[in-house]
Length: 230
Image (tube, rainbow, N blue to C red):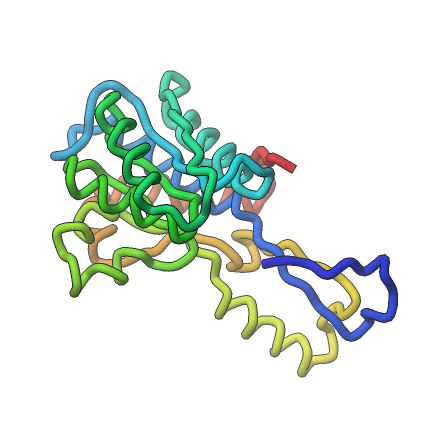
């Protein structure tokens, strides 16, 4: 999830992978938009969703702009409240910011805050509001240890590190891996996506799943151009 500086030279044996987090976040935005305009048990008719970022920097804002755009594709009237922790390792502050968001009418919030983002998941359980995890399937993180927290984690925006490393190994064996370059992998390359687990299926009606799958196809075809902070 980073790139070496190829301008330094002598790096022809290094391959770097970046991820199109804006594309994966667009899908979370579609889901959030569908939920906040629905009659699901913990939804709120105010059409407010939230984003908690670790830092106000381009890579984190790339999550945010995709998330906001995806939600507005469902209903342009949806408002996205945004707050930054200022630290990727401060879940207590993220929890405080998240509780304040939920008190302002947000019914589903997405975190792009690494370790700090766990505070959002805690706040969601306290306020009985939906949350979206990041990077790995965070529902599975709490499924056994804290089911009360887990049940509000609708899905997570995945960076599919395992998939992309496997892809790289296959390309290396085939002699087609672009050493000396960086690749930015998105939905088409299965670099990003949403966690499709039992909780997601329990909360999201089939029409929501179909809408997300349709958005995936339109991003792959180029019909949907996802905004970026870069």
